[in-house]
Every structure is written in C-alpha cells, then in structure tokens.
Length: 241
Image (cartoon, rainbow, N blue to C red; front, side, top):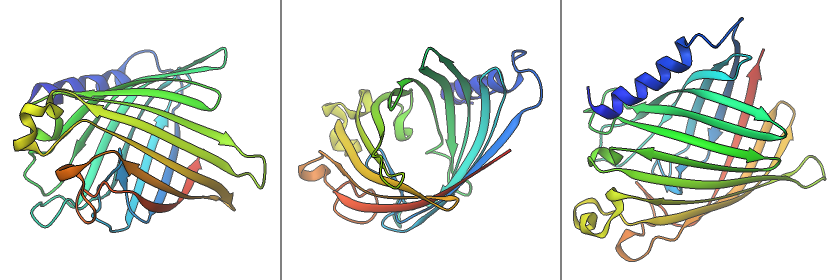
C-alpha cells in the first residue's frame, strides 16, 4: 500500500472510529445532474453530462464520513468510467466561523489503478466566504506532490432566493514545475467560475461559466481534459433526516 493510501485510510479511520463521536449519526444525501463535470476548471467527462450521488453521516461532535461517486471520461485512451470517493474529517463552528479538516481517497473501478489518489484538505469560512487548501503527495500518479488553494463565495441576491456563486483557485506544486512539463503536460494554472443558483421546489438549479488561465499547448478546447471557458448547468437535490 502506497504512503498516500496509508495516510488517507488512517484519516478516514480516525473520522469513523475515534471515540469522540457520540450518539446516533445523522445521514444526508445529495444527487446531481450536470451538463458537464468540471473539477478545478478541467472537464472530467469530456463534454458529456454527469450523474453524481453522495451519502454522508455526521455526528453532533462534528465528525463526518461519507462516499461519493459519478461517471467520468478522460478520453478513449483511458479505461476510467466511474470515480468513487471516500472522505472523512471533522467540522467546527464557533463565533460565526467554520473550520473543516479531513482527507479524501479516489479510485476508479475497472481501471488499472494507477490513477487512484488521496488528498488531505483543510478550510475556514465566515458568513458567505470559504477558503480551502488541498495537498497530495502523488498527483495524477506522477509521484510528485501538488497543492490547490481555492476561495468560494455564496452571496444572496435577495430576489427570488437567487444566490451568486463565485470561485477562484490555483493549482501548483512539484508535479507542475517546468522541468516536468514535457512529460506531464502540466503547468501551474488558475481557474475561476461565476454562477447563479436558485431553488425550484426541492431542487437547486445552477447555471454558470467556468474558465482557466492555461495557454499555448496547455489549452484544451474540447473533449477530454477541456479547460477552455464554457457554460455549465446543473440540478441538485439534497435529502436528509
């Protein structure tokens, strides 16, 4: 077992089996239909729609753990068609602040296993603003580390329950250093999105725009790994106890 898997499963075990959680867990789930799934500004479905589901259990002490999954498409060269994530951590709230720390493990059933990955994350939020950071020691099976920092804002617009959603992030690290570019096709890059969301019945409908600052040979216009600017849309349902 690689060290990043050991790190991930250790964090999840702490989240699930630590003695702090007390009482019955509360369960919630979310279901999403997306026109295309973008992760950090890069298409994960090669222009195809995405179906996603997530189930999470939480305890009153702030500990949580869950499973998420959805379809992916990284090109005809790749076998991955489904991505499954296991995650766990702990959330804190005090004086209007939100803190979150944990880990996520991703794997692709039916594929070679080379792209399986684990990531540690931490974040803080206040009112409508959230800041978060992510780190992995083996980005995209390159055996090189990577960082991702992101800021998100969800601002109520005050009309018909509309919400303005803004996001901006930056990806960098050893895997993105210029000496690796000829082999990896990677360069540090920033990404951002602007969206408007509105509840309709029990669903939340979102329409927006996403883009990155990649350039030259790193810019992918269409298909697998597309990172050019484009419109996206989605419908989500949140269910819980």
